[in-house]
Image 1 (tube, chains in turn brown, orange):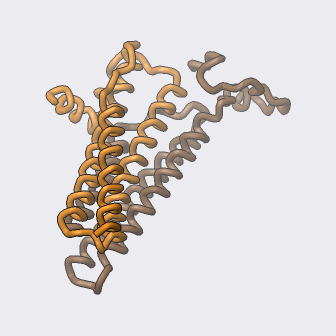
Image 2 (cartoon, one colour):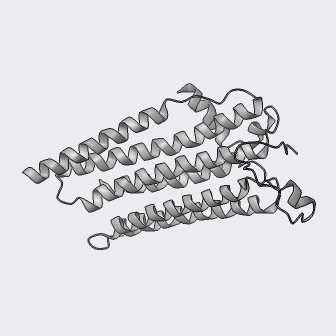
Image 3 (cartoon, helix red, strand yellow):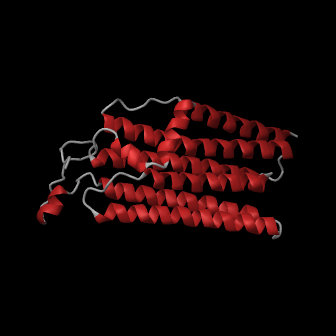
Length: 125
Length: 130
């Protein structure tokens, strides 16, 4: 399905030499699924940095009830993002030609990001 | 703005996106997904910058500190919402075989980031002099 050659980033030396069956033949020499998986990993790392900064801001200058609540909320949002990324990475690994990202997953990832920003506003003001 | 609200419905409705046109080469969808993730990272970086301004510039006057932090956080939220909106628009355009949507957002974002950077320089220099 849609295995036209010469699409963006296919590089030159896609043929390899091992010829390990049909699956390897269909496999994209541009390593698109792998690159997408790494992009999810990078984004999870960014989300971790934001979460760590949030926890530092929440616990700065003593622990209060409000600070602890916001801290827990940020950790939950980070965990949510991690689960979304993990689920998507599993989807990518399951088939040779993975399906497109489901809008619901994208929305969940965006909501986790925006949620951290809302927590930040609560912490800053 | 109305377009944005109409697209917002699609964020939660995978079936509706799939009914449109035909499925493009999976590599195009994955490239679109990576672009979406790159914008999401930009948003996270802006949010992290908001935290950093608030946390690591304690000597700044209250108004400046809060103002800069809130500006960065607001731009971060805007960036993440725009990321998914643009992703949905691109996905739909690819399915329908149309041209990819154009956007003024990158230009706008770079202007805002430049403005914030200049403001930071001014604030730091003023703090240095005073």
